Length: 275
Ligand SMILES: Nc1ncnc2c1ncn2[C@@H]1O[C@H](COP(=O)(O)OP(=O)(O)OP(=O)(O)O)[C@@H](O)[C@H]1O
Ligand SMILES: [Mg+2]
Image (cartoon, rainbow, N blue to C red; front, side):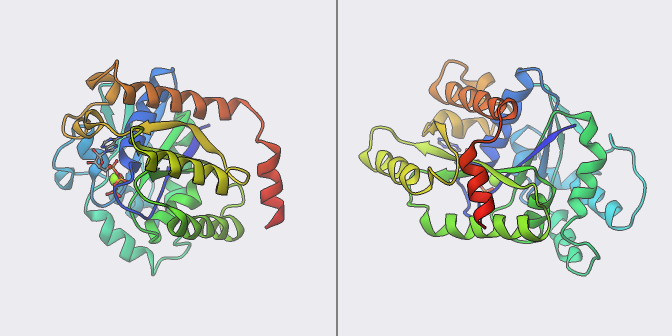
């Protein structure tokens, strides 16, 4: 049964999609069965895995969510695409915007995506959900469907305010819709280790949040190599296997796998109970 991880941050351009691709393919390289869900109407995940023009795909996540809303039966393999680096993808496209609007007037509007995820869960070890940069209904659906959330944070900005909002949303979803939801970890991305500023942000983040949340030891370096992959339909491991970004994503993959095999740290239990 899959572990379901959402990649979420309402701030745009922080590395959610890049992390979905490279963590997903990293986990597959370790022998896991992995499904990526593109829950962003921009379709960037679909596009960056080489399925260009996502808006022309006949079946996408929007199609499947419409079926779930209509309580229509479907084949769990329907619409799932295969990427040559060993992962499956349920693509996303502009139609998700219409679905997001339709959700507002639907019964159980927060748990439609969970219904879809439940129907495909047994075929995978990990399902990663790439969220859009907003806290709208689709992201709430992703948090409702997930076991945990990874929060990528760009090392260029102090994330304080946005993080507080996001953590409040996660806590609200946990209280009201999905008791099991935890923060898997905060991931620093686009770290320019030559600057003191990036070091300061890493320090502040670990100081202010480190006792409540896991801040991944791995930090993803800023590199044009990472930016290039989105245009080429492949992972950083295929594009620049010996580079720093590939090493960092492989290290993140190991951290995420290790979490699965260890008990949750005591401090996280404490944080949960204090709410
Ligand atoms: N480590 C990195 N170094 C340099 N550029 C990067 C790195 N990671 C991602 N990028 C680039 O930064 C941009 C934003 O990354 P990405 O699309 O992964 O963010 P996102 O959070 O998914 O954005 P959105 O909120 O729009 O969905 C992309 O052009 C991507 O190629
Ligand atoms: Mg994205």
